[in-house]
Length: 87
Image (cartoon, rainbow, N blue to C red; front, top):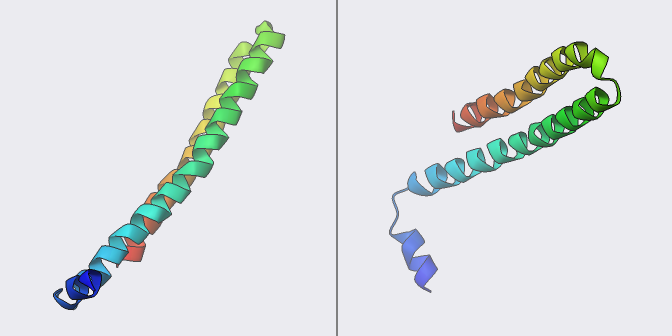
């Protein structure tokens, strides 16, 4: 009964605004998980490649930074999507 009374006392737009904020957080959190895992895989494989062939470390490092940049762009798309949802 207590929860129903709290909902009854709210202004009409407060519930929608609160749920929109929660939705934005879930969207950005979900969008940040994938790139985080992707960056970990990219860096881990680059370190493995540099350890196996140290003479190609410069090329591997450059490719690693390109992979990190492209993967991080996905997190930025999620961040923008979270703002688009809010309207």
